[in-house]
Length: 156
Image: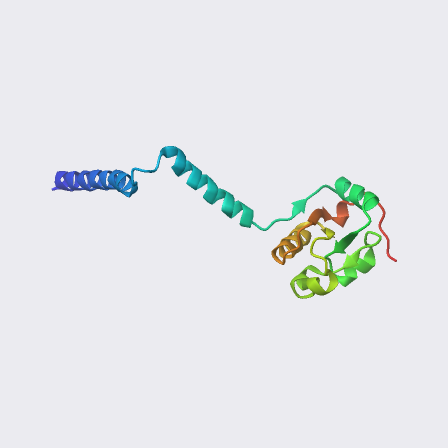
């Protein structure tokens, strides 16, 4: 009896493997070469990558260089009002992360403008940057948290 189950399982496994192989051959029209199949897979992959909504993560040093060299940017602090009041990077605009989806378009009308985003440790700035990218902002750069910022901080 045990031996019968083994033969049955082996037979079903063989049928499954053969069925899978013949399905692959049957679905091919004969006009498709392996190269064209891989091209189709490749182009499908590139479509999904181009649809991927992203922002750029940069170092604090790169952020400082941009702050010193660029003129048309928004420096966005996505912490709370209390955290902002305790100290922020000079010139920063406060937009708490939990308000980004509701208030971004009002406070940030130019979706192609350079936006540099930071928070306390880097978690909220990543989330806010992702939200901005999803809203159509095209030049978002996230540089982590103020707790690691080695440059000037103000309470003004």
